[in-house]
Amino acid sequence: MLSELRNRFDIDELNSTWCFWFKCLWCDKSGFDAFHHIMSPSSLRYQDGEFNRSMLNSCPIHNFSCHLYNPELHKEENERYLLQKVLRILIKESYILKKIDVEFFKKYESLYTTK
Image (cartoon, rainbow, N blue to C red):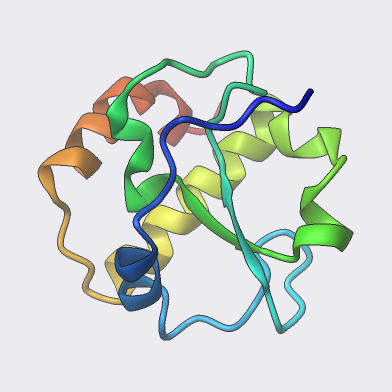
């Protein structure tokens, strides 16, 4: 049985936050069709909490070709890359951090620096 991620994103917030974006953050091709939780229970660095619903944890991606059954997504260097890329994109687009985003950032702060 597949386990479901308990902290799903708010669909309205996703749509309004990412309405300007058209590419998959994994392969960089157009037409993403899903949102990946960068930090999820599949990650060795996952910490449980509602803060995982943060838009900073949302990654536009192709579901079948890039997301499902892709163990590369949860390698530490790829989590770092995606978290940093999402933050840069959202800041560039004038996204205003909410309390949940600040909490998410603090929980995973070590992943926002490059090794």
